[in-house]
Length: 356
Image 1 (cartoon, one colour):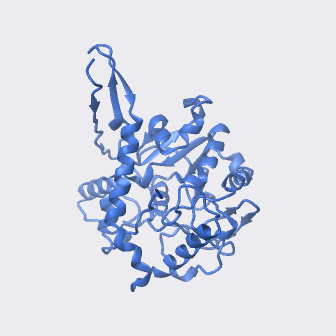
Image 2 (tube, rainbow, N blue to C red; image 1 turned 180 degrees about the vertical axis):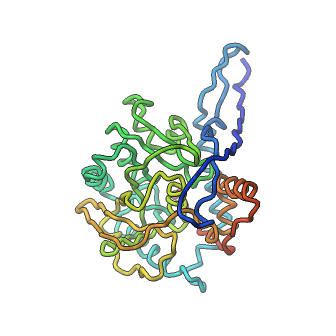
Image 3 (cartoon, rainbow, N blue to C red; image 1 turned 30 degrees about the vertical axis):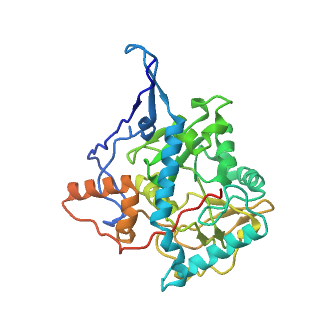
């Protein structure tokens, strides 16, 4: 029998014109939509069977994981020099000082859990499951029908409890490189596949990819953090800015607004008191509630939430990383006949290294 054939299928974006209303800022809202039938997982279909009439397409997990790891390795190599940015003149250097302090502490005190080392990650930690239980005991979670959860390791239990609780799970594809968001529901799964569906491979395998024209309402946002200030709600992620982009795109879609609660789950040692609110940028996302293994904190944050996508803050390097943003920017410019602003060039931060 011949070896199974590996096929690659691409699904180009389709643009439609439809009315769209949002705050009057050219950077935030311009009429457009993208076809929602975008499926990055179709790129990993393998033909099985020996006859031309009986071939069945199955998801090739090995191919998906191999490409994901290869892209991670390429990103790490291209951004390795940026790991020194905290010693260089940089207006965001203070963020890296705090991040490094937290990462170093978690590793030195063995608070960290795999994948390790936790540097340049949303760090996994001892007690992540306990923090998830506290989060899922919140009234905001209990009444939510659709929960957006980040794809990182410490929030895996949150994703599991979301699906096993019969809620709709919205999760971004890793680093937005292969697509946009995927939707999963318990009705799409069986009890034996829910746990797998909480992984990146499972999301690609079982999730339904959506586009920016999807009519969806998100009731709660769960976001990963490296450090968070319980008094102000100021938050630092791992430095790549994907959480801010995800928030901005959901805001653009009309899926969320200022009243949508933002929750993070962290270890108690990730709570800090030295994030200067006055130095935060317009697209930085604050949190309303913090869940740790030992406590729940309502921050009553007064930090304004981002209102959409800030094109003038997006560097050419960041746009180069994210296909959907490039497609979106190009099509908006074609539809409007106006060139969108672009942010200054930047050194992108390094991605995590896997301990061998």
